[in-house]
Structures are given as C-alpha cells and as structure tokens.
Length: 68
Image 1 (spheres, rainbow, N blue to C red):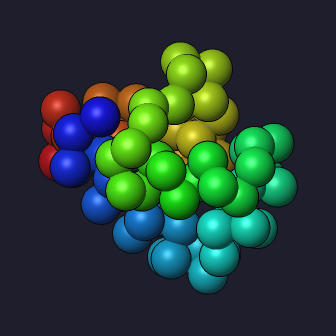
Image 2: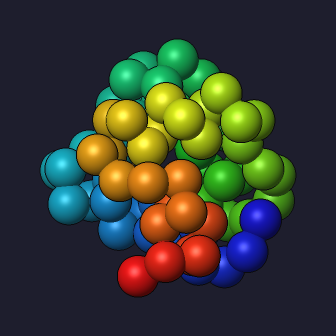
Image 3: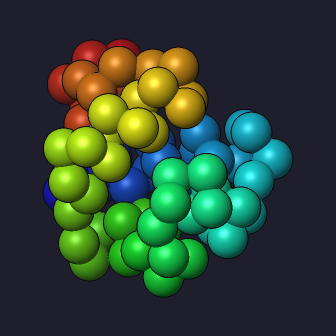
C-alpha cells in the first residue's frame, strides 16, 4: 500500500481520538493489523477498506490517495 494510505489511516484514526486497539476493535481486526497497515507492512482486504471508508466517512479513493 502506498505511503498516502498509511498516513491517512493514522491521521483519520487520531482525528477520531482512537488508539490502534480501539480502531482494531471497531474494524474487527487485531491491534497488530492496524500497526502493520500504518507502517505499510501489509495491505487491507477490500472488505476492510470498505469498512474503514464507512467508519471514517471518506471514500476508498481518498484512503488510497487517489483524491484529496
């Protein structure tokens, strides 16, 4: 995943005032998964991208860095 995704995920999480554990619970993934996504070490599945977009009320294109 590109650096834009990693940064946007971290920014959106912090804007909601959530730690990695809290976001992991909301998205039904392990805490380590959030860390790996934010570090760019692994990529979310399409279903998790959709869940993130809905949770943060943004588009998948925004998360992926395809739009501002």
